[in-house]
Image 1 (tube, one colour):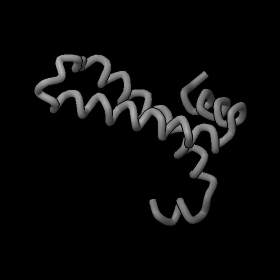
Image 2 (cartoon, helix red, strand yellow; image 1 turned 45 degrees about the vertical axis):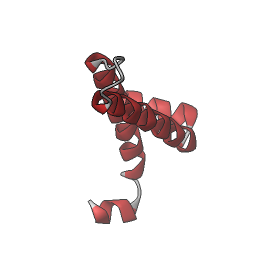
Image 3 (cartoon, one colour; image 1 turned 120 degrees about the vertical axis):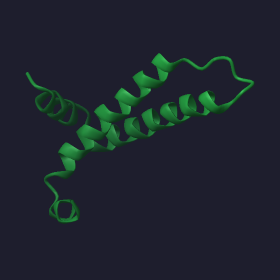
Amino acid sequence: MNNQQIYQQALDKFGIDNQLLVLIEEMAELTKEIIKKFRKEDNNFDEVKLYKELVDVKIMLAQVELYLQQDEDYQKLI
């Protein structure tokens, strides 16, 4: 099973509204990790955690993009 099939299964199971909420959550977690990098007083920065959050965002974006590929207005924009 390839990534596209896995993403479609997730969309079928959870629905686009839920996956959009998860995307927002993942983006917030990525933002938090990026902010940690620039806060000098924060010793909790972990590059691996930043990378993991970035991957999570990319996965959720791929699911949303897969969903949007069915929309003519989206297709016109890309």
